[in-house]
Image (cartoon, rainbow, N blue to C red; front, side, top):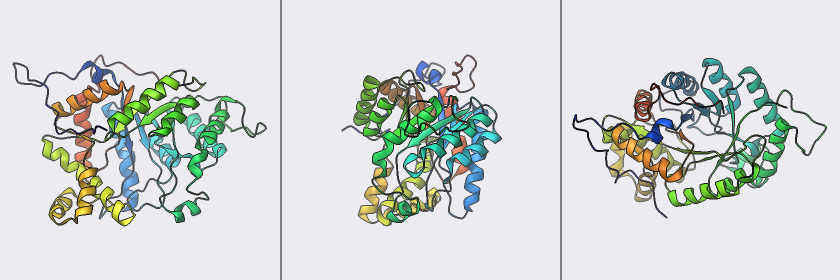
Length: 369
């Protein structure tokens, strides 16, 4: 299995004037969107993470990003985003044009009727702007799963839950035909399945858009995308396959500065593998100072967590993204970067906007979907 790394990517050739070539046409026509997990930071209150998410959404709208999504995590010290539809409502109210959604609502934790009603309310309040991203993950521990009223096998019921949920919008056959989701019925709310591997097959059978994000296993990801496109069954919500590739992107003045943006999340991932819990993000400097003394197992996990990302200077990132989009033929890219340095994150998204031509005159406007 090949691995997506950026270590061998070369910057585009320079023109005679010494500036990098313009981004490839694919970059300028592909929608770019953001997902923010409301990661907590060491030394900052949890509530600040939620306010940071709303502020980032406003900034993303100004820069010209297509969507802004929020996530669902329960009883995770490093994540404040536990109620995605509530946070999505706050984001939608604070913005005016950008599409807003969830990445995603973990359907095994909820009843399909309630989820349909929640998105029906959102779509009624913010018409033409709401996305319904859905996943099948369950809680990280037995205690969390019990508190949610579910178990580790609940993900096996994702496909029938998905069918019931979407049927409430389209008035299709469902387990409780006498029950109607108000005000969802008849509304068009684009639905997306967050998936890796087998989840892509579920998305294809359901006739929904696919969000897939394992950049470290590019061959497996491409195989899943190919299966999805080949076996896709059109539905009232999506008449054709639609693929969003997601992943971490960090852009800075130098490659080293871009790598620094990756350190906090990589350390958090490594820590979670050895301690069973995601901690709040720490400053990159603290983590870099800790690198020489990391135990071998933790160091291996940390180094592994630093692979598979798109990062570097603007020309380097342009080349990496162009390769990735060409290989996957993705319809859209969803950026999922988390880091301690919020100013650095904002700058990274500004630089990425320049790389892909957001806000450029003549950049095609996307349909409301």
